[in-house]
Image 1 (cartoon, rainbow, N blue to C red):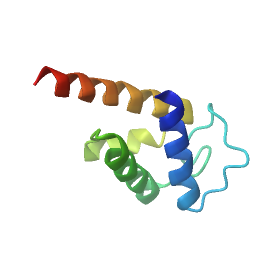
Image 2 (image 1 turned 90 degrees about the vertical axis):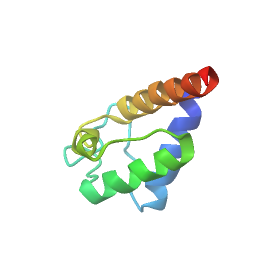
Image 3 (image 1 turned 60 degrees about the vertical axis):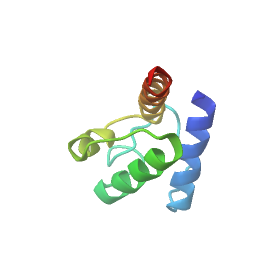
Image 4 (image 1 turned 180 degrees about the vertical axis):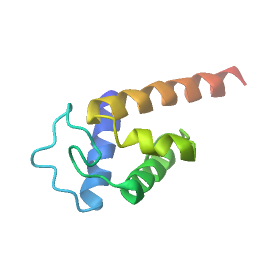
Length: 90
């Protein structure tokens, strides 16, 4: 699942016209690295929510810009796993 999430995030960033040639797993997504700003973070969050059925609260979005690519992928995987487990428990 990790690789699927990573590929989805990279595809979304490419669609959003970000140059990923220097993006590494340890690069911060926000202004200190890839330079994803607040609207970009919000768009990326919506794409992730649509692709993986996870949700991010509005107040979480500023902190998402401080995550690395690996950190974001791990967060989505954790939430997707929790959402999947909750769905199975119903």
